[in-house]
Amino acid sequence: MQVTRRAVLKGLVATGVGALSGTGAYGYLYERHELEVTRTAVSIADLPPALTGLRIGLITDLHRSRLVSHEDVTNAVARLMDERPDLVVLGGDYVTWGDRAYVGLSAEALESLAAPHGVFGILGNHDDDHDMPAALARNGVQMLKDARTRLTIRHETIDLVGIRYWTRRQTDIAALTRDAAPMTILLAHDPRRLTEAAALNVPLVLSGHTHGGQVVLPLLGAIAAQKFPVVAGIGRRDRTTMFVSRGVGTIYVPVRINCPPEVAVLTLQRA
Image (cartoon, rainbow, N blue to C red; front, top):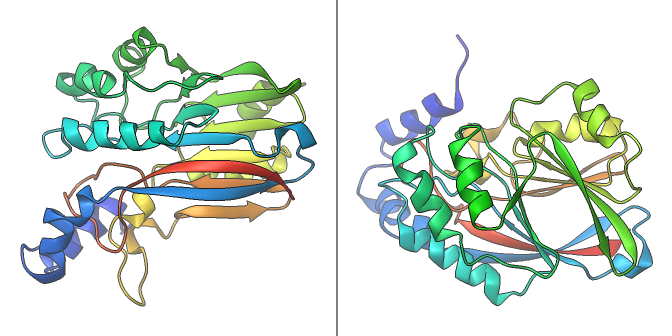
């Protein structure tokens, strides 16, 4: 029988990790709210010199719900805005299980996001294909649903390619990257798209989805996220670099252990 990520997280809670005592109590009461700003230099093969130092803000996996508050999300937005990124990327999963009661509230919590070169978003597996992107678009977010947009920054061209969670075939992604600029960034909620991106020589992939494992145990690591090529932070395959954010919210159980929430500020540098 296949062991799912949900079953593992629930099992950890059942065995006491999520209980309101000891480490579990800390993960529930404190750590899931203790947002970090992750500042990371990201090395890109053949990065145009003019783009060295470009700063990308990444915020993902909000999961706005009765368990992830308005304050949790607005705090993440404020912390990211304090960093003054050059552009902002939203990585999906704005609500949980497509809960329409929180679609407008999630978009409202993000409305103060801004950046000189724009705010761009993709959808995660918990997002519907209509209401959520429409709510974000009303607040100025350019949603990329299996789409590509071209930016000119410091007289250099950057193509942003955003795919839906369910867009997985290499041929479908290849159609979006055909004739793209040498500096192309793939926005893919699921880190497993690293395989396709590397095959297509995409320089950079930005993802979320894993929550960094959410519960990271000593010696055992992030049990619930072992199927992903990169659980959190930077990974590489061939000439492709990936960054995976731990995200802001929680899923299945409102607990984080050895895995605090984050917003990320990525500074591009030439490999």
